[in-house]
Each structure stands twice: as C-alpha cells, then as structure tokens.
Length: 85
Image (cartoon, rainbow, N blue to C red):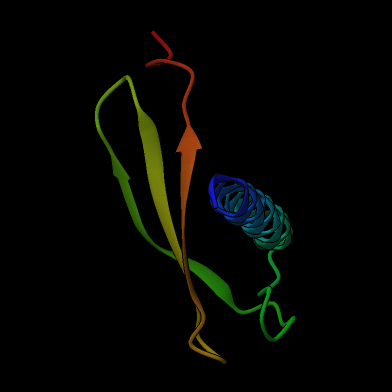
C-alpha cells in the first residue's frame, strides 16, 4: 500500500515540476518577443507598456504589457540591479 502512495506522490511531484518548467519557458519566450516589440499572441507590432511598478531600489520591477489588436495582457517581474547610484 505504501509503495503505491509513494509512486503516486513521485509521479505527481514530477508532473508539477515539468509543468512549472514549461510555464517558465513559455513566459521567457513571451518576454523575448515583447522585448523585440512583437505581441506573443497575434505576432503584430502593437504591444505597449501600460504599467510599471517598483518597490524602490531592491526587489523586482513589475511591468505590464498590452496588445491593442488582440487584447493580450502580460505581466512580468524583472530583477533590478540596485538604484544606479
């Protein structure tokens, strides 16, 4: 009985890890397309930065992009390297 539970938990854990890795790879590809000025959903050059937030000098910067053609909205957290002072 314990063998089946351990096997199930191992299978579930590896599935969660693979799903997270796939999600992060897709997020990275979307950010690269946005940095090139292209919407990752409709592949047109209609992406705009609509919101930019920061927590001061430390912590990530939150950027929100929106496509005016297909209404794609993507939020990304970018690590900053200090205040630049």
